Image (cartoon, rainbow, N blue to C red; front, side, top):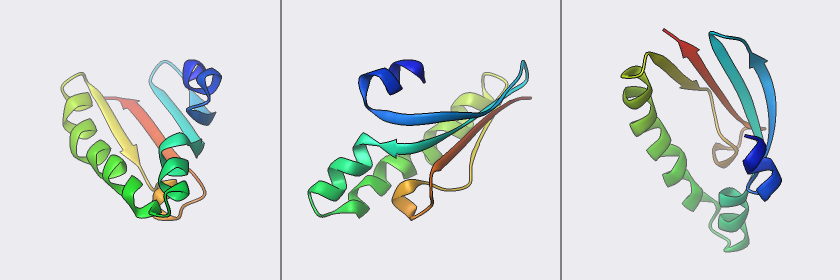
Length: 86
């Protein structure tokens, strides 16, 4: 998250951090901004959808539950991501 912030790819704030859980909000996303600049903000939805397809099973195999309520591209105020140790 620190690297993404420093690189300017995302603006991220941590909402929860413990040994069992981590949560963060992506408040600004370079991929969403690029899609908006090309006048097709809905194009970013494919990235978000891919996360929802891949991440749950991938992280579950590592003993981690991935969840997200919404994304910037879906019109939410942020992408609210949470990882929880199973």
